[in-house]
Amino acid sequence: MTGLNWQERLGQTCVQATLGEIRSIAGKMLDCGARFVALVVNQTKDGDLRLDWHWELNGKLYSVESTASLTTPLPSIVDIYCGADWAEREAHEYYAVTFEGRASTLPLMLPEGDPPGILLRHPGGRA
Image 1 (cartoon, rainbow, N blue to C red):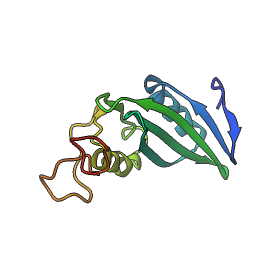
Image 2 (image 1 turned 90 degrees about the vertical axis):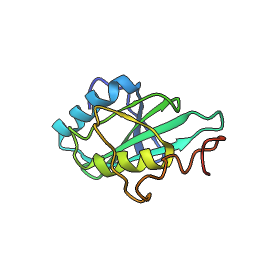
Image 3 (image 1 turned 135 degrees about the horizontal axis):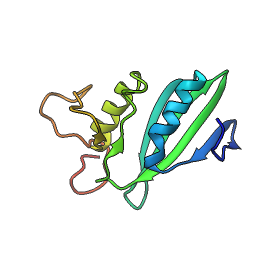
Image 4 (image 1 turned 45 degrees about the vertical axis):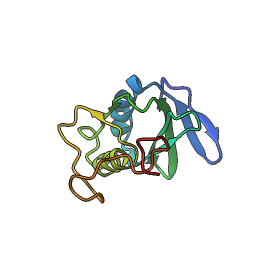
């Protein structure tokens, strides 16, 4: 994982990244043999999104942290890690995020036709 300013924090190795760096980092993680673990999305108090992509390599957790506004399309890594499909679909349902490069985001748990964003904290959200 060269070229990034990784820091040890609470038993994991973390790095801050821009959204524009996510696909490149995902490619590097794949080249190293890392396993994609999760994409965790949370809404901050000011309404933006905190995003954490997690990988495991040789028993060690690597986390890439970023932020985005609710209307900013996120980079999809499904073409790099097919296992990210579920995580991206879940993020779409919970926070109504869109992913660049995805033709569609099929529902996971929401009934067909229900609007995404069930965990958003704003007038248009359902949480």
